[in-house]
Image: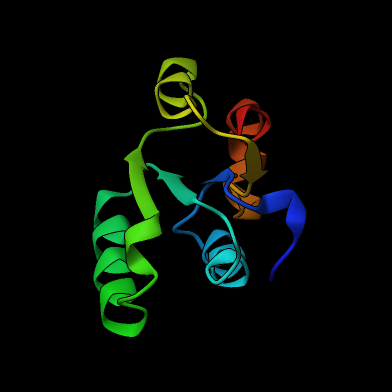
Length: 109
């Protein structure tokens, strides 16, 4: 995806290691973005994604940076934000039973 709007800009994808967030990454990976930040709370998924990117897209893997944090913690979001031009918010509780049992946590994501 090449669009003048994204040229030399930085995009942060919250929930970037989830099913939806990783699909978003695939669409933006070959764009003119300067940097793509993956923001998620799952260290293992970040490590797996990093290895997969290095194996499948070694020429593009360097533009992807990883940040561990939780969207429910404002400080962790703020720490990842400096220099970000666009945010694609894909972080959320997505299992219906979890959202039903913990509705306020679902709202916070």
